[in-house]
Length: 394
Image (cartoon, rainbow, N blue to C red):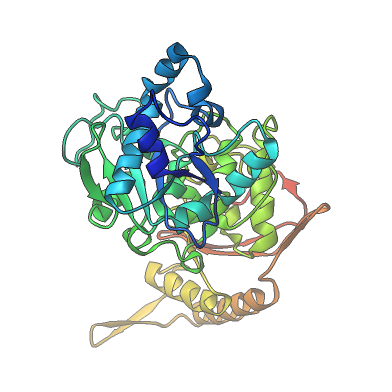
């Protein structure tokens, strides 16, 4: 990755008239062995890679215009904060990627989650927060375009930038420190619906279903529709080439890549606001907005949890006798059905618990997922597209 030399950037800015135009401010370094800070922010009037590296070769008028941009001041303030925290290197997405190179851009997007994960600290800059404290109440007047919270919380790319780093420090528009991820975890959970334990200790993918992770991105926005998918690759540990111009097909490709790497069937547990027919795959992360309670269930657990659910909800109209304030099922037909269903659920969970994706389509299985309110067994057809995509009622 290319990192900004904090001392070089600040030294150039301190004596802009006498700065050496040949001094390099970016250096290629290994993210695994280098200690660096990283910036997370909402884009505005930014400074590109070309402008940052050729600043001293510009005419004075053009150079002054670049230096007056909010994006340039953001870089300088980030460098000052990094120096204060003892970091010699800083990564900023606006000027550390040469976006004229499609290969470099693709590599950066595929590596971005890891870069945020390996950073010593992430500075989250909230340019629309003027107060010296983190906002604790929803304000639909002030943040009308972002669900009542700072805009940073509704952008697609900032999801991984919140989850991946070990430490995230939040700053207001004047670069006043207003809290960190661990301190603010309860409030951040309220804003983002990301569980507190994920914010405190990172995402253990084995503990969360695909549907749950997708639900965290359901209300987020990106400028380019393809970035709705590309911004989620790191969260699922998948890699794929960037094809800007493919539109919503990017999210279809993302789901197929997830299926190739995981047997988590909750990827089919989506439920759009407007019912539709067509592909078994969701059109957009927003189709998972109601999937936050869908848990990943191991095959050997499924039968037992199904039985407990049926008994707790008294499904099947059982007869009961009461003994010492206990209700005991007494209907022999009900008990036989319960025993058969338990055996059948166990058999299916053992025999049909995986699925694959290939050019021929998705080869189907039995869906095993549990909602906080509804538990169902669903058979997945072998075709890639069919009339009624499986989803859980809400």
